[in-house]
Length: 120
Image 1 (cartoon, one colour):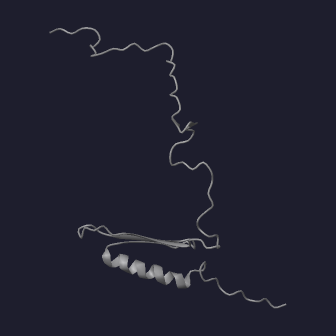
Image 2: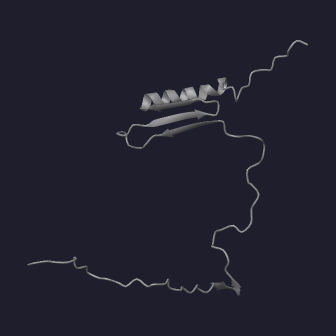
């Protein structure tokens, strides 16, 4: 079997010189009104359901503890004051949870130092 020239392709389709014109689908009408937005999309802004009491998150504790005893759990503790601690393994994760809770007492963002009066 002697093969010369370009390889044979299974199918060659001609590419049109110009793009085809697609016709848009007619809007679905329910009850006589045209549908202008997708279902589930809010068309107006709703008020925030959370009260604006000035609170904001300061510290985060992220623990990943898979249900399998063969998988090693891990955790991170982050705070806006700059604290970032990571731990892996059951014992270290439990210690990290304790130190995260203890950090609330010493965090400068949660417990600002009392302002000292300057001598006049």
